[in-house]
Image (cartoon, rainbow, N blue to C red; front, side, top):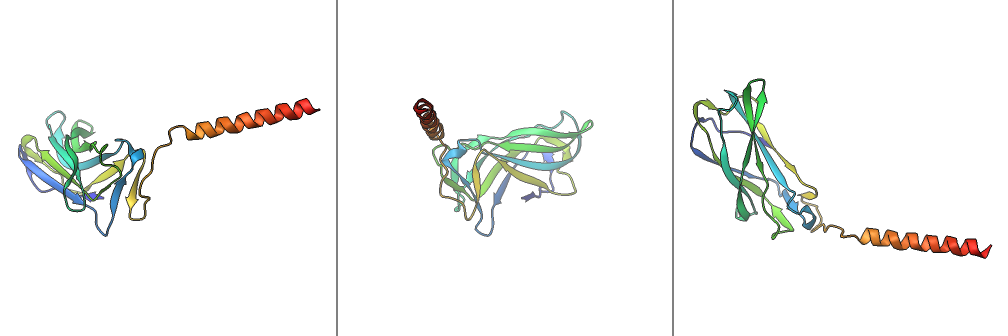
Length: 176
């Protein structure tokens, strides 16, 4: 998903970003997602000296009506550097959704507090982007209603099968 930043200089102001999926698409968080889901929003900035910029803010996921899915959580801002200059910022959002799964995410809302450094702003050039990560999630439509983690049933079946094979081998060996 491309991400175009507004043309503003950093003067300590707050900016809201709202991303929404189009054409009936959404992200489904399953029971097996288990709070591993995270969003990484990258914004390009013009070359700032290292250590000069401190971004802050919070964010949350939204449903198909724009309502919050879980509480707002603090963004983690990480500088993206090239040599001795900061050329971008990665904003990580790890939303809390444990009580809401399975849940369909139709958008993301970020409340970003810009640093007070008026000589710098969002950079020109190609857009930034938004990426998603997590152990299990779906991008729909066409995804299952839920995916539930396996709590050891596979190990139980393996033990039963191995026990049966060992017993059969012992029986065949003793019959000779």
